[in-house]
Length: 113
Image (cartoon, rainbow, N blue to C red; front, top):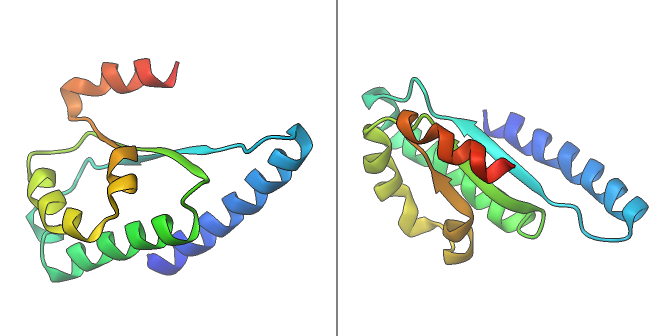
């Protein structure tokens, strides 16, 4: 999964760089992650390690490219997982992360408009 995320981010960075050069200003992206299906099985050391690795990669290699990261459909267990991962994430990255539960989806949609 981490290899996929790395390749995916590299591809997006190339596309964003190309578009930025065409337009003459930095084009940024909004990452949307659907957290539906997240459960207790993801809160072990493997799940926490994977989430930490992906966030560290994104903040280390692509900090200026990411405008926001929207975590949508976040179940209650996400707050526990986020609490374990958050200490390893840079404050600037934390500011970019917006978390929405199923009922807050309208708020996320409004931010995209």
